[in-house]
Image 1 (cartoon, rainbow, N blue to C red):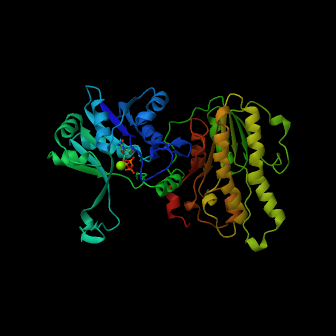
Image 2: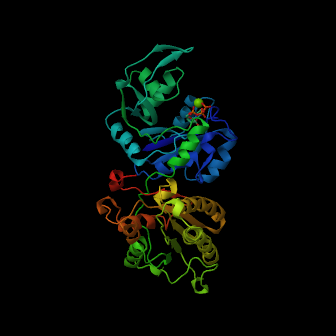
Image 3: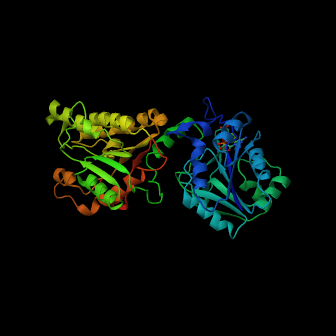
Length: 431
Ligand code: CTP
Ligand code: MG
């Protein structure tokens, strides 16, 4: 069997803070939860062991009854040994991973598992992009050629017996497990890691991690179950709204798609909308492309009312009608994280939607209402064509693709996610 060991036993002294960095909440989940999830979702992993400090053991064990939670040691080396001796007897391969690396992806786990078919010790690494220098007391003592330099990450994968033997026979100080295998004379190979799989070490890294949680790809989840779901769409007649409606209808959902018949600038929504919805999608929006100097306060108010103020009404409706829980999904825009020329009020309204999502997700937890915001890239919609006539449509995202990705967040456990969709066409598009 293949075992993943999550090393969450450190104190995080360089990071500082009230709790060790692996227990800090990042976008609604603890830092360590991300890596645990990545291993849970990989079918090549049969068992997960979480190594934690003594004062966290009870809490984490309650949270993860399906995994084995064991005590860490004073050093990383001791923690990883404690994980190793807790492995079941029939363990064949182990993957040791730093809990402080939340953005472990499926493909990296796969590369390690593949290499383990041939080798007993596998490291994950990325090529060094900075020049590495060795410095002792401010004096540069060495400057190895960068072409051969890599930065080691985790997971590090091993043949179980080999790494146990290394731990039991090699006694050097080390910050990872590969060193022990090397010292024992084992041939160690490296496979590609990922730039996103960085370790949270100082508090600045958490800031970067917060940004990364907003750009990681959409979940690759199986097709969502939408059969019989009662779905309300605001903006259901626009480009993305129509695509959503079509997919939902083809999957036998019970869809109500609203267009301009509901005035979102009013103080209330029609009473007739108070029905037991499972999913509410807010994709209504207006776009005014105008230099700030030409913008009137009336235009400002109208965009803010339709794009943002209406989200308040829609969230109230969700709260009122989703007694058994449900999904509230806002559709934002790539302008929410980049204000562009002549889009000031639009970009501002969409940016606010992102933060509103995070606050509502936290406040609606007890109601079991999941709140997410999906920011599509520039999409091939009538609204887009009107604002940007003559634009090369090859560089625009297909509304059907966007709708499919939106629906992945209209079921499932995720909440508080801000998802910035990106498709290969967008990388070629002008920013
Ligand atoms: N780790 C561990 N047990 C230890 C020390 C470290 O399980 N006694 C884990 C950390 O929780 C982390 C990983 O090993 O996930 C990488 O270590 P590092 O980044 O050095 O974390 P800390 O040791 O906690 O941080 P610091 O060195 O700043 O105190
Ligand atoms: Mg350390």
